[in-house]
Image (cartoon, rainbow, N blue to C red; front, side, top):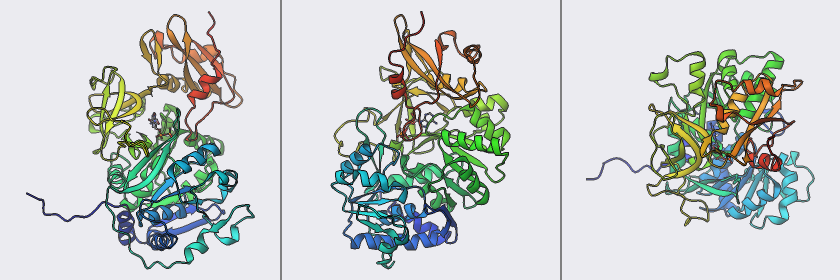
Length: 540
Ligand code: ADP
């Protein structure tokens, strides 16, 4: 017997339609690439996205065509997404922090037809232009007055857009059609293209907005510091308009001072980014003596959130930390460390212990942890294994690799993370499968050791890698970047671990460095670090 409800396809443009109709005057504030602060609304963005959709169609962009962006978070970048979505074309965010050759590889692999760029990235594009065979047009997200001299044939966005009017209706689409693409950094092998559908983006934005995930509302002013080019921009270009939240976008400036300025002047209530960004902000606050009177929640993910960051936000600045885990293949949110009734009474260090966990899954994300034999592990908060996930916004294949199996027999996707889950459903990542240290047949979590090292007052950053060991297979080496102007000694650092981890987990040695290498998405690049210490041997 059929249900008697309407067939209303879950296409992404419905989100902007909703925001423009129900929250027409809600602001979208951006620090523009040209410099000044720019203000618009959902109603205006809706009108410009329609105009853009018509303009793209006039240029011959069709359903299924991929179009790349190399751009910061601004109103223009966001309206480009919606304009493309409105004609069934596919937004493809490219991470400008990758090496130029990788950028070229990704654009060629996706066979992008147009490229929208911010002025900042012109030098990169000038360098790789000869390699970009599929790119027919390069549109600069600015106006003719700001276009510099260039060897390339550049189209100024504003003038190009003005060639069209906004008399347009979104193209009718199947909700399962491709909506967007984002390549994962592919620490091994070539990057892999993740392809979101309209349906997956809409379902994911709904799941991400509920109180125990981001908890967005029409009273929030949301600042996505996480770039749109990192893991689908954590869905904020969808979940914010879906929730009627105002948006504040940092554009090209992501230093502590610039972030603080917008948090303060635009009364941002929720913001989101990777831990390194928050370290910069906290350092700025400490130096300047500034406070965060408007900020209510900060979403921290992409790598494990160090306890010291959580403690500073919660205790010094009175901001609630939402530790989140996810990945590009998950659209990307997987879990948020929400506070359930069972743990609501925790306080002080016990609450910080809980907040070190990555948290609980929303509806639409199923998790399990399995051992090497593929058997499911118990949810006891101790037994760790490979973390696998299933759901309507989780990848089932990669672009142009549709036949390669990435799911297990039950349809679960292997995350590459090692984790345990407790009886209340709180998941905690203990490592990347490829970073975990195997010592005497047992596993040592490098993330746990790194978090502990950061408890030392003079440690700015810490990374743990496995070093080959004749007797134990591998043993942990702790690599430390000391805080500016400090010279911590080994003994005081080792003392941090005393009584906090089993003896056999203790790092065998500590090395001090000026800098730890990072990936294009701000994570510690353990491959590079292992290379740097490839000849290393512990003192006998
Ligand atoms: P990229 O490597 O390109 O940044 P992703 O953003 O998809 O790609 O990375 C996802 C991975 O980041 C996860 O599989 C996990 O290893 C790591 N990660 C994300 N959030 C967290 C977190 N809160 N704690 C620990 N690891 C995290």
